[in-house]
Image 1 (tube, one colour):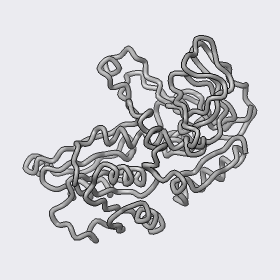
Image 2 (cartoon, one colour):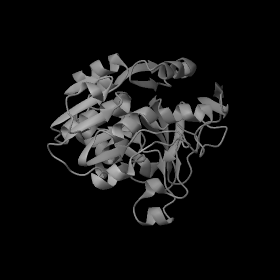
Image 3 (cartoon, one colour):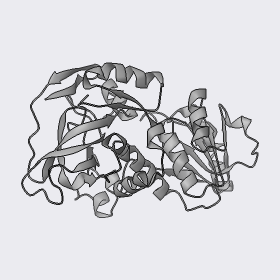
Length: 332
C-alpha cells in the first residue's frame, strides 16, 4: 500500500510499504479521510518526544473496515467507523483510576505506532465507533478532535450562563466555540490575529471577535478563559482576563520547555482555578453522537482535501494558517 512515511525528523515521503495485517483483536480500516493536526507537524519536526522513527503519522481518521482479525468482536467488514487513536496500557496507576489519557505507557495510533496517512491501517476493534448512515467518513474524521474538545468540557465546571473568552479560532478554537454555545454560554468572545478566522468564528456563533481582548468591553473579566493556541503571549494575556472566582483552562499545546509568567497572589486572592485538558478520555462515543446531531458544523470546519501524494502541499497549507481542517484522502 501507499503511505506517508516520516523516516527521521524533517525527512518524509510517500512510499510503498507492506499492507497491515490485523493481529488478534484488531481490524484493518481502509482510510477515507485523515485530518492534519498540530501534533503531526510536531512529529514531522521532531518535537513530539514519544514518537519513534520511522513512523506513518495520522490519528484523526475514519474509513471502512475491510478485514477483521481473530477475536475482534463488535464489528464487521463493511462498517464505516471513526477510530479513537488512544492506546492506554490498562495496568498503570492512572489507567486503574480511570485516567487513561495520563497513562504511564501512553501511546496513540499515528503518534507512537503507524497511523492513518496511508491507504490502510490496523487498529484495535475496541477503538472503532460506527458512524450513523447520514454521517460521511469525511465528516467522521472530525470525531477525534471533537472528542478532545468534549473532554475539555468534561474538565470544566458546569456553568450555565457563563461568559467565555477563547484564544484561537483555528479548528480547536472553533470546535470549543460551538460546544460552549451548546453548553449554555451567555456569551463567547474569540481572540485571533487572523481576520479570516474571526469571520468564521462570527458565522459559527461568536458574540464578539477581535485581535486583542483589549477590544472587548468587559473590565470585570470572563468566568471561563480557554487558550486554544499554545502561544505564550496568548496564555499570559488570558491568565490576566479571568474574572474573580473564574477558571482558566490550558487546552492549546505549548512547547514542552515553554514557561509562562503568572501572578500567584492573584490566583490566591481572586480564587482563580487553573485547569489542563489533555487529549481524549471517555469522550469519543459522545463526540460521534454530537457530530451526528449537528452540534458542530462539519461542512464549515473542513476546508481542504488532498490526495496522499499531495501530503507535502497539505502540510505547507497547514503551516500557512490557510483554511481550517485540512484532510488527506488516500483514496482520491
